[in-house]
Image 1: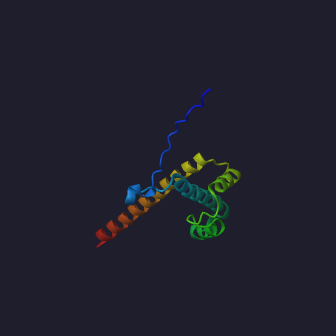
Image 2: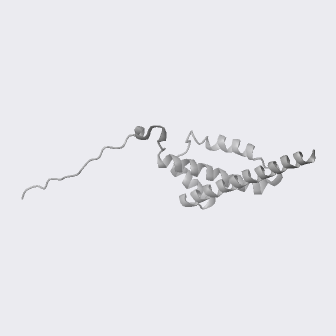
Image 3: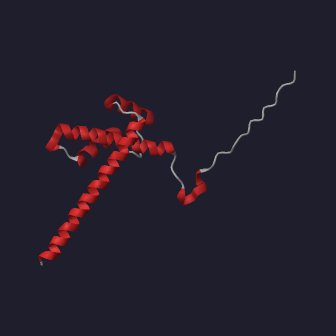
Length: 129
C-alpha cells in the first residue's frame, strides 16, 4: 500500500507592519486593557459604596495601580485577571466587556452633563451683564 502524500498548505503570517500607521493592536492586548479597567471600575464602585463620602477616585486609582500595576506593565496575565474577576465579582470575560461599555457610557454622560452645565454658566454670565 502506497503512503499518502499530505498536501498541507502553510501560510505565512501577516506582519504587524502591513498597515503602518493604521495598524491595530492584537485582540488579546485590547481585551487585556478592557478587563483591567473593568476590574478597576468594579473595585472602585464597591469601595465607593463602602467608604461613601471619604472615597476619592484619584486615590483609589493610585492604590489600584500600586497593587495591580499599570495597564501597560501587565503585571498579571489575562487569565489571572479573569480568575480574580470571577472570584471577586462572579464576572466572565463577556461580563467584563459589557461592564467596560457601561463604564464608557457613564463617562460620556458625565462629560455631556459637565459640558451642558458649563455652557449654561457661560450663557448666564453673558446675559448677566
